[in-house]
Image (cartoon, rainbow, N blue to C red):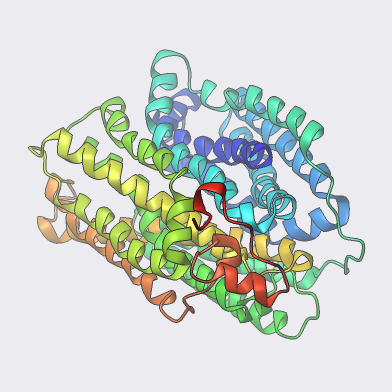
Length: 481
């Protein structure tokens, strides 16, 4: 449990940082004498670093050792946080955010790689359950924490809170993380790295700005076309290169392919939720940032209750059944947010968000575990880079889709551009139904998919016998009388 928790701290730090910044943007803009709209570059510059450097994170870890890279990534992210808090101009802040993004691009996928290579497959469900919790908690507590720090201290503290977390993380990594590395590392695919950076930058920036009015429609379309061209050129290159920076041949593994496709669709809904829900509570219902944050915080409680239940649920039902049924449930809990109204009892909202947080966290744990369940150790670094890249792209797509539908709804309503409480329904329904469609990616999986990892009771004993491993002795209370 220790290694997943150390990695989870780094994941929490990154997710918290990205969510608190959005709340503090108006205050930062006023302090630096910039418009909030222009200051949005502080967010997109971070995404730029992620898009460029995530694909090479696996190769760097194999080449220089996972502990060395993970510790250095935390250090870079922490130094970037310090410089963000000290920034006294617009471009200084943007430069510091790019440095932060470089650390984040290496920190999360390499940390996940450390865990996957250190934890036995039979313990992966429980380990990933611990790892998943901060990914859900960070965006939930970020808005109220960012609002509190900005209101009562200074916007600079939203960056400086990373300093003690980063320092503790570097100490724990030095003491407890093994320096895993590969003996035979192929040369870096430089051409593939440049093509993937070109394509991912266009797609991420395009999806992040679509429907927000930050750029002209022609500029957004140009970014998306640039991303599509770069991605197409990379796919052509990757299918010919023996060691591409993002290995598309991993998609031939059925469980990996299902996890990538289903996870992409599911995260579209999850990515839109932290964007739409606080806006609805504040702009539609008239709540303060702190009040809306305290309501959305309850989703974290649902995520926490899941971490002990994921293992027994997967052992009982197996990956296929859980992923199909839970995709529909989780998508439904996202869509139902579109039915909330200002007079909806807060107890009802809290109860639905609590249950939604539980099922979303269960789906995250199941998808993340299934995706790497059949990947051999030698390809694990490439699998984690691929997975991290797709996660970032899907979350950006979710925000873009939610913003686009909301913008279209508001424009069609009265033409004034004023957002009302009833304008959010179509956006929630759209992203919720997209998340439900993730179930289609798991239908073709066999019933025993990932049974070695989940311990699914109907299939795991058969697998052990087929591999020449005797089944475990029953516990004393389970012996036949």
